Image 1: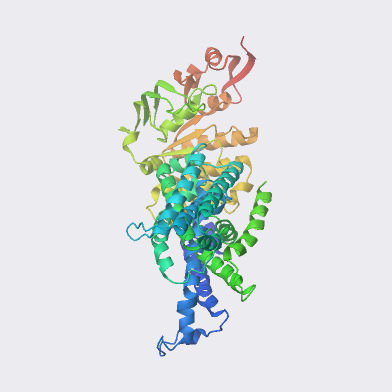
Image 2: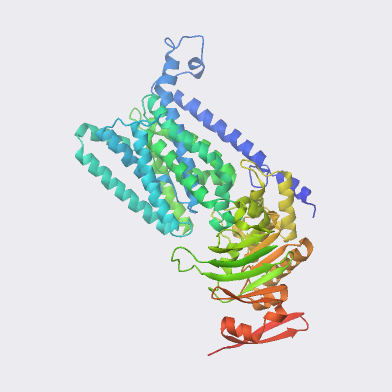
Length: 352
Length: 263
């Protein structure tokens, strides 16, 4: 009957499971997944058409102008790796947030059609060009945000019909409908445009991390940073919302505010990711599920773990995309779809 | 400690599940065990929502410890009033201990993680509900009775003085019903919890409660001790059922036996 004894015996379990104190689990999670993400980001740029040495790339005694390894590492390959990490973290976290507030583990920016909305926004700017800027935001991220916001607002409206919980059938139908609708408009926009711009747009629509320089990352960064600042406030509300909005409210959660912040942040993250790399699918489904299998379901652990694992996952997928048909570089969206499509079907079958 | 004063409430949207209340007056004394009785749609669940501050009345007020409930923040209310819904279905596979620890939420500041004190409160709640052995089990794999006891433990972890329960035994078999009843009774006696429960089970209410509120079509028909308000005439009025009500020597409380549907 002695409570402290039970607590201690439970804490002796040697994995990051629910029995350990939350503080320990959080620190272990950030350490383990942070190391994984960092290692992936540092090691994957070493692989490529020209082999380079990590030691030489980081050798500060050689001036950058003379250090070819450092140039390849930092200038040619690092933007791609960083955008992979940023996009992977953003999409995986947005997946976690959508799954929690819609109370459905099949929700994600891609399956809900929010990515498609963001794509349409970005596509309009890419094809027609626009020079509207707003503070630090350049046209493509801004248009992506507008598209994502429209799609998320539709999802929000559908979700509020029934206590914010979305049944799998409504979720799938909403996703199919929104995806079809936005695809049709994207096709229409392309139809109006000239051939060279369409070729570029098509490549972008496949989901590609070949961003070329640091500039697009800097452009997308404000959206993702704001999203992550909001994410930091969400995890305990997400846990309680997973029990139902009534249970959350009676435990002190301001449900309406939590929903608004969640939809806003997930839309910001999706828009940032899509504006940078196009609609890369299934990261928001695959990563949170794998993470939950490893660390349990507490969102205070799942959200940071998914962000870090999402970064590592997408950078690793991009490595596969670069080497699988070398010297041809496959768009990473094709790799994530090849992994994520069957994974999603498996989840659907298991859930049914 | 919890007073409902001239409360009228109507759902704004034409929600078919929304039931309106008209000029409801109820007094829930500190340490009492109050039962809300009435047919489907009479407003029991709505009254519980009003008492927990999830919705606010259009007219009248709910007064908690002398202050209107609307003057408390969401978290302040949650530290004083805990709610056990009829059923809880988490989206994700939480352990029983994680569910119970969520009850500590109103006591934690933003970004604060639960510490040893919160764990001690959670364990106390698990032990009080006889669910200590389930702590590391997945909530989803528990039986109906075990789930309900874990959710009650989660409400206890809120350390709230008032416990509101919405048909806590509705989906449980007879054995679990009695188990929950004796748990509520001991919480009321040992911890001094003020308990309000909505139920369709007249025998449960008669055995457990010291006050009954009889509701019909959004109004309070009768309020008082079971022996005074639980009469054949009242059952007739509430449910259109002829009932035989007598004191059961062995059980030690009134028992209600439905005889037939009137008309």
